Length: 185
Image (tube, rainbow, N blue to C red; front, side, top):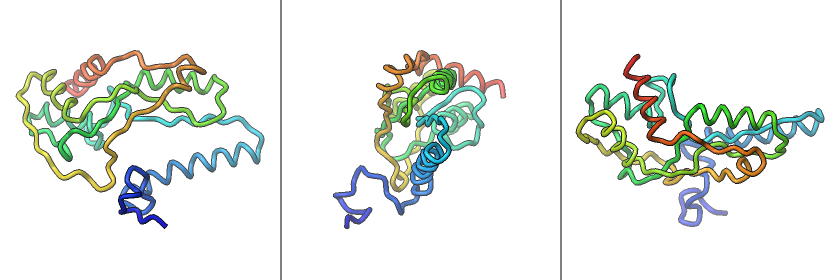
């Protein structure tokens, strides 16, 4: 048996960690959907949605994009966790909605990743937002949360090949639109 805190376990999802309800909840939801499909002989679609951002986010939703923009607009220090070198990929909400519509109308029978495969470090994201807000870089670094993944990047090959879907709005465009939304709140 491999203990969740051991070196052999590194990179896997920790089934008893602080994020386990979130991680395991997604897995059980998919499992239940596929059981429902088998039992009731019905069609389902399962989207695995990766980091999505854009207008209409809540200012206090705890997501990195909204946190950094709101802190920057308030001229507060931007909070980064770890050294900021963990990577994420961010999909603009309009692109995600288009992907969901294509998935619903498509014929894919397994889970499908929908997200933007272009990675960026959290530090690069914070610098980008500071630049767009025309403020000096002012970052506070805090301890990386337990079990926080160092990389998140969707593989969207199936969505590209079977749905002809891929994100069209780049991060610079999307961040501009999101900043404008938060400015007008």
